[in-house]
Image 1: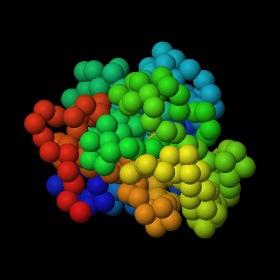
Image 2: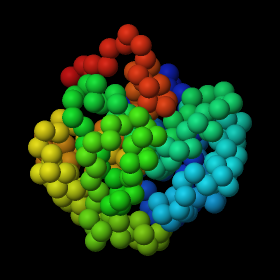
Image 3: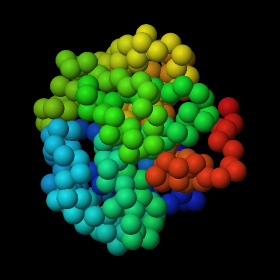
Amino acid sequence: MADTGNTRPRMGVMLLDTRFKRPAGDIGNAETFGGRVLFETVQAASIDRVLRGDPRDPALGVAFRAARDRLVARGAGMITTSCGLLVFQQHQLETGCPVPVTTSSLFQVPLRIAQHGKVGIVGLLDGSITQDHLAAAGIPADTPVGALADDAHLLDVLRADDPDRAIDPALAEADLIAAGRRLTARRPDLRAIVLECTNLPPYGPALTRALGLPVYGFLDWLGAVDQGLARPDGRLPDARTTEIAQ
């Protein structure tokens, strides 16, 4: 999805209600999409409500549907969210929508397993990705999951939610590399890593260099859906190759 030429659909992103700075590569920065993006903030969707609340909350679903409809009316050709934990919203957001909707980067895990073999997942907060999230995304229950350390610099900045506080890229890279190394120490058989959180991809290249493994974020997933390699809900098309040219 790095090629954001005019052949790509204009992306519509439903953002959580946050104020922190978003660097290029983050889903909330227009530069990430070469400017071909529309944003709608879901006022009811705070970080705590999504990470620690009930992700199936009907009121939350109503707020996301309203944001989805606003994006469609504004001309979005594909719609996604800014949090990978919103897998439970997939069915109701895709139902009745005239454009493709994919709510989470987690949906790409079956595709990456088909391509590489054993895949691990890195999220933002320890314990935030549950077995229910894996099941909702069609991910095998034994898929290893890791997260940033609770005292990570990146987590500290995101929790502060202060638009005047900058992320130190070197420290954020170190946070992600440490999480990746803990995960691969537990599972040295991993062949690829998927980043659940849409705030992590700016630091993904550093993780690839550190581990020597392919690392996939939300842009890779949106590109795969756009190319027809998988359906928006993660199901793989029948009789389609899942290989990516290296």
